[in-house]
Structure formats: structure tokens, C-alpha cells
Length: 324
Length: 194
Image 1 (spheres, rainbow over the protein chains, first blue to last red):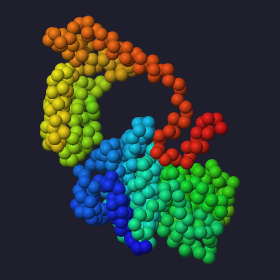
Image 2 (image 1 turned 135 degrees about the horizontal axis):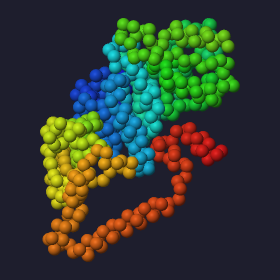
Image 3 (image 1 turned 45 degrees about the vertical axis):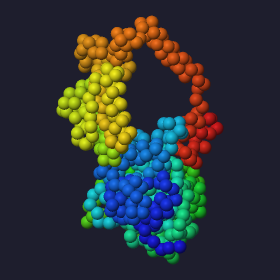
Image 4 (image 1 turned 135 degrees about the vertical axis):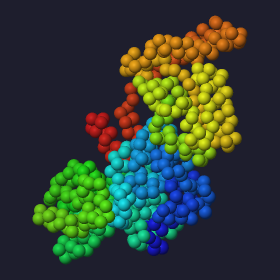
């Protein structure tokens, strides 16, 4: 077992998966010669050759569209979108083709595409380098979505995505790329899609989150220790959602706070709240509260801390629910 | 793809990608000079769509889309190039749309109907048949036989498709995923009236 950063875990996964299956290949901007702007694909072009890890023109729709064609030729492409918001030009290809081609061909063709991108803010970056676009992807039929919060899960979920015959989109919390270290199993390591992770056990309030919001919730749990016992559920796969895990934590504590970095309206938190309202109504003592980003473009770095959900805002929500 | 499609960003990105990757691709543009009600002159300032090929660094061929043998030759050149590692070719086959875009379209609102009638005479199947008859390779009766056979095939195909039983509602969920979402089971049960 090694201790790796989130980024190192992703790179490790690639070495294992490209070594294991000759049909797995990576395409994206700067992924080959430079090993990726975050070095996530470092060493792969040298080890496996330019056909297995190649640099595309600056064209996200082209990357996504080319992946569809590559699948038809028997490849298992992993597309890197250099940053979250850079993926927007590829959304048409995702919605129109990636998500529906298997259906369109009556199941005759498969599209084992993995799309991965660094997402989220808190890194003092300019605009369009800090978005949380997961809702657009979750809402696309035919597409599955997962978001790791630990290095081990970054490797495991990426492996699961690559091995899945369905299109899977992964969002990697760039805030923790280099700052979070964790135990990462060596060699083949797969974390099954559709399974949440109980990051912390508790009895009074459930904090439900994903990505960089999970460590934030763990911090809140620490800070409130003594005042109340917080359970932290790491959703991990947004679609398909591990409903059993979500309903179990709601039944246990009766109080749920959902934390998401993305803007509030129609974010993934709303989906979680709806599922809880539908299926856990009688278990809940109080409303499902959401702590989210605001319905604004992600602000410039000098005030981004005001936008990001903070431990204070989450703790406020917890205390409000404790009144029920 | 048609003339209108060349304005889409995806066309540009795909062509550029294919050129950079030297993909064995033929970019075949059926330029019938109309995108519903938009004439080619409102689609591009380029004199010919095939001019775009220069921008991607690939060869382009412009051909009379109503001439079966000319199109065959142009395609053969492109296929040969692709098969021998020469990369993509853009083929622009120029025709003229002689029917409405779709059943809900009424071209009389925007098209010169006299021009349409004129262009109908260039229609490729009739043109090719007349050529073959002139050559003595095809007789009038053979031409009639081929036409009747084609229509019969079409009618039979339609009848077969219409005779198929109505689809089961499970088709709504089938093939949405290779590994279905857990929610599909409940959804299907609900749909069946459970």
C-alpha cells in the first residue's frame, strides 16, 4: 500500500490500466508530450507510445466526438478535459452522441468512454477554471457520473470508469490534487460504481457530500465534536446513486445537510433532497438543508472564499437542524 | 453531410482532427445548395465548399453530383488515398434539391420553382439510365424491370415493417445503458401498471 497524492493516484491508475488492456488509450490537450498540465498523464506517452496517449488539437468537441468514433473502432478512450469549464464546448457531442449512441444502435455498439476533468474552486484561478458542472452531466441520459474525494477512490473510480462499457464522467477535485495524500492500493484497484462511502459514522446529523466538500464536512464533524455527532456520507457515484446508503443515513439520524460547491438551483443537491423527500419523509425530523455555491458565475479569486461553502455555513445548517 | 452542416463547429473540428491525425476519412459533402430555406449563398462566402479543404491541408474534389460515373471516380480517388495512408479527402458533390426539405416544408415560399423543374432534368438516376441506354448496355425494358423491382422491394420492406408487432414498453429502457440503472426496474414496473 502506497501513500500518494490524488494526482499520483490517477497517474498510477493509468499505468496499471493501460498496461492491463491494450485498447485503453488517452486523448486530450497536452496529455502526451507534457504529461498533462497537472501531470496526471506523466510518463504514459513514453511508456506506451504516442498512439496510446496523444495530444489533440485545441478542440473539446473534437475530443469528445473523436472518442465516439474510436469506440466504433474498438478502443476504450479516456478523454481529458483540461479544466471543468473547458468541457462546455463538448456538451453537444456528449448529449447528442456519447449518451445515446448505444441506445441509437439498439445496443449493437458500445461506447466505453471515460471523460475526466479537474473541477471546482479554491485554487485562486481565473474564470472558467473553477466550475462544478456535474449537474449537466448527471442530467444527460446514458451517462454515468462519479466524483472521488480521496486518492484511493480517485484511482479506484477511474479504473471502474475505464472498465465500464458505459460512458462515465469523472470530476476530480483539483483543490486536493497535490495537497491530499492517502493510502492507495498497489496494482489493480477498482472501486465499484454506484456505491457510496461512509466517511465518518455519527448519530445526530448526516452530512451528505462529494468531492472536495467531503473533507470540508469531516472538518465540520471534528469542529462540532462534543456538541453533536455528525455522520459524513461520501456519495462517490452521482449516477447511479447509491440510494440505499442515502436512505440508511437519513433513517439513522433523521437530519440531513447536503453540501455542494456547484450553484444552488437545480444542482445535484436538489436531486438528493428530492429522493429523500420521496423515500425518507417519515424518517426525517426536519427539512433537507442544502449548503451550496450561489447562483452566480464563480467569482474572481479575491472573493472566492465567500462563494465556497464554508465550515461556518455547514455548521449553521447543522445547528438549525438540531432544533428539530 | 449536406451544405448546411459545413457551417457547424463540429464539422470544422472533425475535419481538422482528421487532417492532423491523417485519418483514412472521406468528407463527402452533398451540396444540394439549400439548407431548408437557406441558399448556399447565405451559408458561406466561399466560392465553393471544397475551398475549405485547403484550410485543413487536405485535397478537395468538386464533382457534378448528378453524374454517377464522375462521383464514382472522385470517390475512388479518395478511397485510394485513404487506404494508402494519404489521409482525408473532401469531396463536394454539387446537386440541386428538387423536392421539399421535409413533408412540412413548402419551398414555393423561397425557391424559384422554374429552376427546380430545370434542375430535375439533371437528376442522377434518370440521367445514368439514359446514358446506359445510349451506350446499348441497357434496354428500355430492362430499365422498367429494374424500376419495378426497386419499387417492389420498397413496398415489401414497408409492409414488413408495418406488420411488426407493437414494441414492448421495456424498449424505453433497453439499451439506455450497457449496465442498466437500478431505478429502471421500478420505472418499468410502474409503466406496466404495477
